[in-house]
Image 1 (cartoon, rainbow, N blue to C red):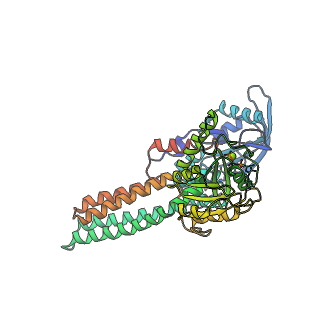
Image 2 (cartoon, rainbow, N blue to C red):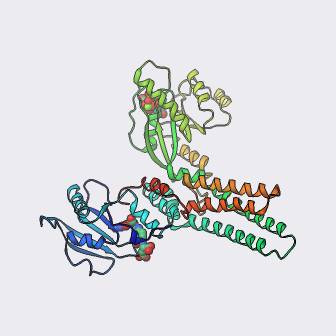
Image 3 (spheres, helix red, strand yellow):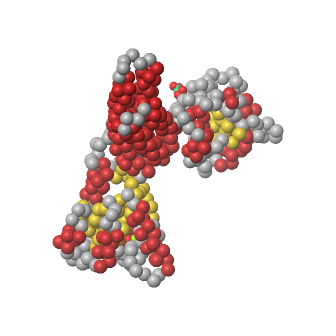
Length: 463
Ligand SMILES: Nc1nc2c(c(=O)[nH]1)N(C=O)[C@@H](CNc1ccc(C(=O)N[C@@H](CCC(=O)O)C(=O)O)cc1)CN2
Ligand SMILES: Nc1nc2c(ncn2[C@@H]2O[C@H](COP(=O)(O)OP(=O)(O)OP(=O)(O)O)[C@@H](O)[C@H]2O)c(=O)[nH]1
Ligand SMILES: [Mg+2]
């Protein structure tokens, strides 16, 4: 059951990032938000100001009577607020000391320290947003490209919620229809009729779930970034390529083989796709203790990557180590990069094409900045089939949602199998109901308290 606003205590937290800034915001939410704020605020009586106004005054320690800061205080009365509760936001000077002092004063005057994500959790508990919308708030904060942001914003707007709610309503309708048919059989062939209803609905919902799941790969990449490992032999130009992609000299580049010792991760926006570029240590047999560990990490990066960029030095013949690396990365989604094409070609491309007949091969010069546009184009094509795909449809991005959609689909498979096997309708109904429940967990229509704790604990403090 949902708790009502009156059962929840008043919480407070700093909602802006820690450190120095122009302004910091300390947020308070709950039944007694105004009482708590009023105790430490000198200015207009906050109980009498209009809702959704911002009010000038000072924060004064009620015990010592010392002025802590000069502030602006927003008063927003329930229910039309972020949490659906009374909200007070204290806009103070953005320094660590005033901000923390104000929070401490609120805590010693009746507020409790908010847990991470607790304001958004309240927006959920009080029914302003559903669970998938609450999750979108965090995706929005973490979005790394404009496209990732758009997907999160659509989810926050309730696009996914509406789709799921409609599916659930359809299932509920058919379940009700089946009940009626069982309770008041008007025809002799009621069993046949209800089976037909259930089958048709199961097929229809399954098709929609499948369609959603097809967006999952793209969705997950937009949300979490595409883990892209740049691998290859020492000195082939991996770090130089990373720097080129970032337009910044992040990684150390030297002509010494074995320069990169540890993996380096950086995000880069490639046509709206967030790439998590991972520069790795050049892979070779080595006795150097530090380099050895780096090489181990490179091997691990290959295993966990969504995409491997295997870099070869075109100004040198293919070596045995190169051939081995081609084998090691064979299972991965891969693009081969022939780097140093500004130098005379020494690599036997016929041999290479024989070794990797299926792969995209791109020629680059990291030093001259040649071939990088081509590389970006290929990456975005490889994962998104062009720029315009899925721009307007609902996209699932979240591993929790994907898991539940898979479970819902499995339940529908059981429905269809049961009908095929001539199982009694009341047993088939159970699987249909399970499907309805799995979908409901996406929007939080049903949930366990542990789930909320786990979800919101990943949020920012003050959100
Ligand atoms: N100062 C401040 N800025 C902020 C937030 C905030 O809480 N405080 N937000 C959050 O952290 C974000 C804005 N999100 C918000 C979402 C809904 C409501 C809200 O009050 N919704 C009500 C009333 C809407 C209306 O007036 O029409 C509702 O949906 O019922 C407020 C903020 C970003 N900026
Ligand atoms: N001519 C030419 N030189 C390049 C190119 N790319 C990189 N280099 C040079 O090759 C050398 C090695 O470059 P890095 O980027 O450090 O190579 P790496 O693959 O990261 O090497 P490790 O970190 O040791 O594995 C440097 O001297 C670069 O300037 C290129 O496209 N053309
Ligand atoms: Mg390097």
